[in-house]
Length: 120
Image (cartoon, rainbow, N blue to C red; front, side, top):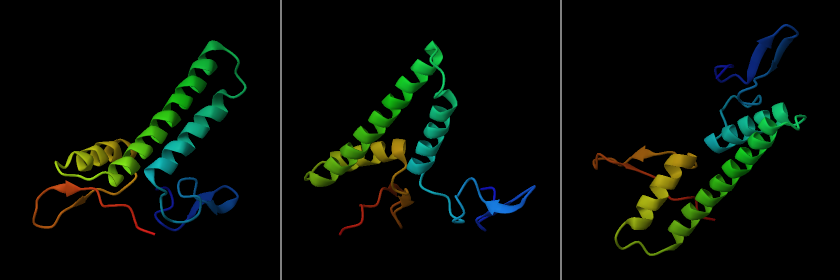
């Protein structure tokens, strides 16, 4: 992180909001960072009508579709009865790709797990 948790970074015009955390002092989730980067790429090719710009726009649409599908898979895996721990494995694999939930070590078990989403 550019600001080291302060939310501000130095510039020629004085302190300004950190470009990495948006001034909050805490990095956003991996999903937000991926979307920010996708938007940066999208803006960079927005004016182009050449073949490369078309391919980049297609690729970004596919990236977003895949991320939406993985989020839905995680949600569905939380809703099924999990006798053989298959749903847990599905959640773990999808989360590893998305980074939605922090992966924590289970105390004494020696293995990592994905915590359940917060209940409302």
